[in-house]
Amino acid sequence: MAGSDKIVERWYTERLQREVTFVRWGHFGQPLLLFPTAGGDAEEVERMWLVRSLMPLIEAGLLKVYSCDSVAGRALVAQEGSPQHRMWLQDQYHRYVRHEVVPAIHEDCGGQRLPIWTAGASIGAFHAVATLCRFPDVFTKAIGMSGSYNLLRFFGVGPEAMTDHFFVSSPIHFLPTLGGPHLDLLRKRFVLLMLGEGRAENLAESWAMANALGRRGVPNYVDSWGPDWHHDWPSWRVMLPKTLTAWTQRG
Image (cartoon, rainbow, N blue to C red; front, side, top):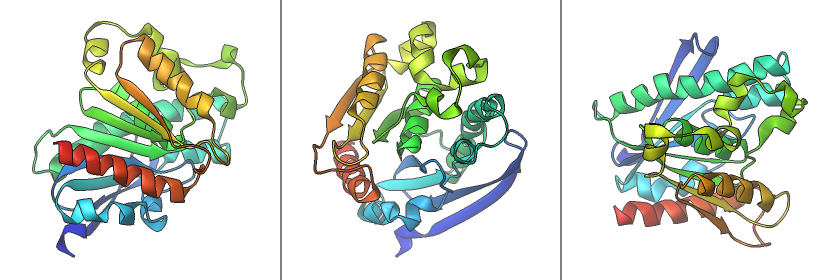
């Protein structure tokens, strides 16, 4: 299937001080950057059949899907280094996405600086929303599925231990301080927060993120699918293609 050809690239990044993997599926269409869950690598979204669920859009030339390793999420799961190191790494991960992954996507799109959509589930939802909020110059829409948006509790420290690296990479915390051209541009973007109300879901997380966005005038919508939808891949494999089908058809 010509439209579903997969390309894998690897390089060493000084920002993260390790080798990273970058994957692409498809040749034409709207660029979508998919973030893995906390412990996932760039190919997790394929192994868990999320890419397969998007294949009709990929093969129709409506969508080009990209993914990169969840470096900051893996460090969080593995408790790599000190909390301060992991906070630094979270900030560096977003900088790596902006200054290495985004140029790689633009190069793959023939040098065109096309607007990029982001999406992810669980911790991947956090990164999808956070990167749009930090870099609305390159990301225009974000889909967070079953997201956790206040990550401070996962670092094992209280608010008094929050570093500048964590603050600038956590939209729940930095959105109230935004102003000027950055906020003006962000108000032209859109964030969709999707989830169920079944096993392991936390509706309060999505509403807290929505309220932080709404108080700053950033367009967003919370889409709850109800108690039959759980915090798991079968839910996300239905949620994501349904939304992206509507978005790509809308143009």
